[in-house]
Structures are given as C-alpha cells and as structure tokens.
Length: 270
Image (cartoon, rainbow, N blue to C red; front, side, top):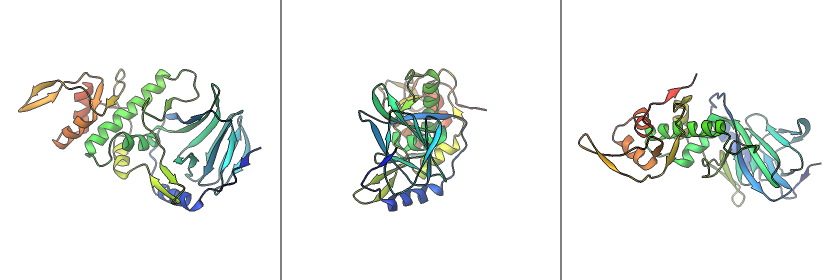
C-alpha cells in the first residue's frame, strides 16, 4: 500500500511547470533511453506528479496518483509511474518527462527515467553547453550528445543495470525539465528554446559507427597552421566545447565543426 507523505506538494508550482511544458512540441524519436536519476540507501522513493498518473506494480496496474501530494514508492517491487497529458513526475526537486521506474538494484533504491531520446537531449544540451552560445555550436553539441547516448546504450556500459545511462558527468548531465524550489513554490526551467531548436534541427543526425561522441569543455591543445591562423589538432574522438564556440563565431557551421573534431561528417539515421 502506498503511503502519502504528510507534507503536501505545492500544487501552484507544479501547475506552472505543466503549463510551460504543454506549449512545447515533442519531436518523435524511435529510441527510448533509461536514465538513472536517483540512487540512495533507503527503502522507498518519494514522488509527486503534475497530472494524474497510473502506477503499475510488477506490470499490473495498481493505483492512480493525483497531483497535490507526495507518495512513498517502496523499492521491494518494480513500480512504474506513467503520467497523462504530458505530465511530469517529480523525484527530489527535479521534474521529469516520460515514465519513472522505482525499484531496488544492488541493495539501493533507484529511480529510472524512461523517455524518448530527443526529450532526453532537450535537458542534456543546455546543461552541457550554455544555451546562449552560437546556434551552430549547440547543434554540434546536440549531435555529439545524441551519438554518445546511443553508443553508450548499445555498448551496455552499465552491464545488467536497469538503466542505460546515469544523469551526471559519468555519462551526460541530465536534470529533467524543471526544478521546484519549495521555499518559493516556483519552478525553474532546465531546458531552453535555443537548445530545443538545436536538438530539433539536428533530429536523427549522428556520428558514424565507431565515433562515440566524446566531448570535453576544454581539451589539451596542440596547434597546426590553418589558413591565416592556427587550429587545434583533433584526435578524431573528442569535441572541444570552448573551441567549438569560437569556431562557430568565426563562421564554421555545425557539420564542419563535427567534421573537424571527429574527422567525419554526421549522417542522418533512417
């Protein structure tokens, strides 16, 4: 039986989050990812929802979750929360699109966000690169992040874990769509229209097989003569984010940037 936490969630902040989300189109994506968003030593994980949601336990529908309260989800079974009407699920202070699966893994309580690749990227891109940067830099970042996510999933990096990627710098920073501040009852967006545009504009584009999509804020730099100036030497495997911004500001487009760092142009997947 699910027990509600005595402290109710602030419905005003959650309603704002839903209204902000409802006006955003979601590109279709064939790939679905499982992202570890919470892991601790407890026996249950508190969640809340912005819209009515279905709770299934071990594959069987068990309950209905409603906005305005917290629910303690035990981890001695596999529980899946599926919101309706583009609703979000709150875990901790962050609000996530898609489904949340709560269970035990290797003696710990885990919450896993299951969602389409393109929605995942909407959170990753502005949290790995400033959304204020040049659009071609953001587009190159989107392709690199997409390639990293798919390659990591295919390689089964985390073995038999019930997730494909983790939400921190061990993979890519993913924080969901909004963060709720209980002190102010306000939600802060963690996605941005500019990075949304970069993701949507490059939908389906990935690096070719063999290119993992690695990137760093700044790489060790050795310089070579290039035209009337100098360019950093590429190792063919990593994108330098700071230099990518400079390249975009100097007129390089996103495909040229990717071709420089990975020595090959991206291709659009069928």
